[in-house]
Length: 215
Ligand code: UP5
Ligand code: MG
Image (tube, rainbow, N blue to C red):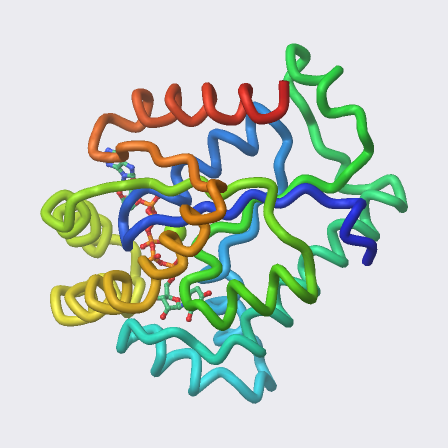
């Protein structure tokens, strides 16, 4: 698809920082299409006949980053499908009245959640798919993220919501994913929001940033 037909925001932050939660609110208010790289990988893992099922399961449990070819292909497919559906008149984005004028450019608008989280993915996606409009970085302490994930783990069924996996995810985030955030910071493309606060407070900061960017 044509990169000029899409607007992408990368949503980054540590495990449990609140990426999915905040994306949901943005979808409701602004009509973004939310693509969580983790959700796409979990769906691929479940898909019958997938040649990557076992590999993805192992990487996720160990908190490691799945080879980028797999993740980028999943994201690209999901973006293409969305754009095709929109062109065919299906899957139209519902945009809150107050934002409609701003968003009438006909572009597909995507929140890409939890990606890129390794430098090779970032460079490859920017070059071969499209660069992001900006990067929303949710900053949270490990203490708070740990509590959130353990709580969620009581019901989530996620194989990585346990103390051992969470510790590994934190380590990967610090060693492998923070360099991506720093890379985009050098390009002055990062909007950082403190996500220790309540969901509502965090969201109100995010709205300000989104409104400023697209006003
Ligand atoms: N919650 C959220 N916000 C709150 C707030 N402000 N106050 C109080 N509670 C709050 O939130 C987590 C929990 O906290 C929820 O219960 C929520 O209600 C509560 P959520 O919004 O789900 O946080 P999120 O940041 O989305 O956490 P998630 O666990 O999804 O982040 P991860 O980055 O760890 O998980 P992801 O699914 O992105 O990736 C999983 C794995 O997939 C990775 O570890 C990796 O192995 C693999 N992966 C790749 O290999 N490559 C990729 O490109 C992407 C993923
Ligand atoms: Mg998530």
